[in-house]
Image 1 (cartoon, one colour):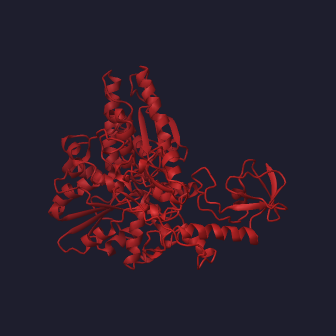
Image 2: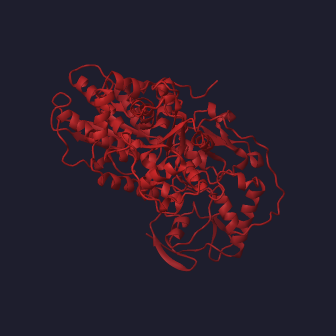
Image 3: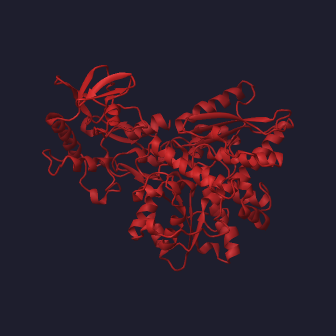
Length: 592
């Protein structure tokens, strides 16, 4: 432990704690723009300067560790004036179009300028006239608004290991751009949106598709149908002033109907459907393996489109290991325009299918390949919008969502189990799959469905699942791994690849991957300001929803049983495979 003083107040912190973090422990805010708790600090912006008592030298609080008997001054006249000058210099190279900016009202630079009372700039405005890059189907890059804080580069390179963004140019001409300066849509970008989620200003943001949704809602010839993802229900409340993890599920249903959607379904239902298909696929592969047959093990989950894109670009040799099950979004789209359209007597060509997702990559997934047209009425999901876009639509419509009565989703694609809702957090797909796979293998129900070894924010989690009966020859256990945050998955895949090349037994039988830290709860389309504390609260909200569910396992969902008996046949059967499964292909890192 280290003893120090900050503004004369003594405190004790762990050795290695930075001045910035030490100050926050005693509720002193030191302004920053480049710092983010998800990333290693690198002192780019210069706003967090502080001084040692009795010394004129200023240091950067985000990278300077606290030392024994240190006495720090965080605010005095000179420090504040230097910070003001730094802000004025940043603003001199930044457009003044705040009212048209997608981050207006939620911009860290705008907030600091207001806090420092900056009304005029002493410096000449100098803009580079850089064009907007809208070549990417999910996110848009506006380099003119870049303040060169470097967050997006560190996220893309160090957190996600994608390397689609980099620094180009030097000095006043320096900027963030896609790799080698090519269009972002032609780069290795996997559309996860973590760059946008971490950008403090409006330099990178999600493609706004709300106008298309409004047009469909106002078209009397269409039947607008909507689905909401598991993670949306525990994050949307933040946009309306409530704490992360607050569950607004039934108020969201009500708000969607007031927006004009004629039918409201829940992606949790199709998460249950995904488990039926994916668990059946796992059991089939394990059975073939136990009989000495050739099969591709481990089975790797396919719910996350950013991960699918990454795998097709960086690990195409793993394609045979990928589950062919579509994501819940795409399964729901296919079911809406086939099974439900038939039951409701609606021409599927008149259905406008909208998904509300915590993810920017879902925008790309809707058009990923022709498998996304499996219902035969155009793309199964016509448009996908993020949690942030939904919040804007609710506010535009003047809907006071917190005052709405609770409503239920429409049937039969609305009711869900607790297994469906935990899809939104890392480990949730694995936990849900284990609950049903155990039943498929043993014919029994788990005494305790809480598989807590899959939970938490550790980058890679490993465990064994004991089925109690032989599943791999005489072996009763299967080995699993759960990885989230794209930069963590390489270690898992490289271990699998090395075992395969060395002729050794696979280290895992089942692997879950989610591209974003924390899973979908930390998706690129969720409300800004996500930290591990926020991710934990959102996950706790999903687990609470699971705990209070009447059914906790996907195979117990009466509406799932109804869908198979009335329409799909059996999991993995001919009709289910045609509607609910997909294929993969190797993709180039850089498009020509």
